[in-house]
Length: 282
Image (tube, rainbow, N blue to C red; front, side, top):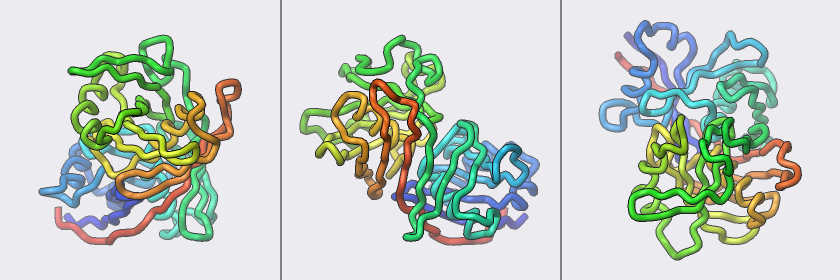
């Protein structure tokens, strides 16, 4: 069987996009297909698999999203930017701003004139049971893992995040590699969690490394950038527009909410690029 795929990336967070017609060729479990296609040694190599859903109800289009380990994810900010550019370029939608049905609800991307993509990521979820996060308090919670105690903030952007601000002069990537897996699977998060380690550079700039649920270390995480900005604003560390420096590049996050008003949408802007198109013999 031959299938057509497109490889895309947003700040180094990379994805395989499978055309809907190609998706319909498969009779097997798509989680297994995702693992094989995303494998960096025996497959194409990617952080996730994206499939447009042309029959989604209640939106202009929908998607199916799989992490590289075959699990499904409610949302992915970098993936959504790539998806938006893909479906607009392939004329699967006929307008630059449209709605996408996801497991996290309706998400609205906008193709900007400079080629970047701005995504209305909807409102942050701060109620612990909806994140889900078992402790009653989601902000400045102390979690004990291995030989450390970290103070972090549980925020959901349709998927759970635990945001940790690092004050000491430590290596964020090494922290993410060492402690990310243990925090991801900690008992406080019944559906596991993404983990962000952050240094504040100024009130409008942060540096971030992420351990992604179902992926491990990735070069970028859009929902993580959003959750981190929200947590920083709620703690009084950041202004309402923040440049987020990730291993793979920079995105901008805007949120006009605060501790008294957290019902504002979060907006994520950043690049989305085509890498290549190919045909694979399966």
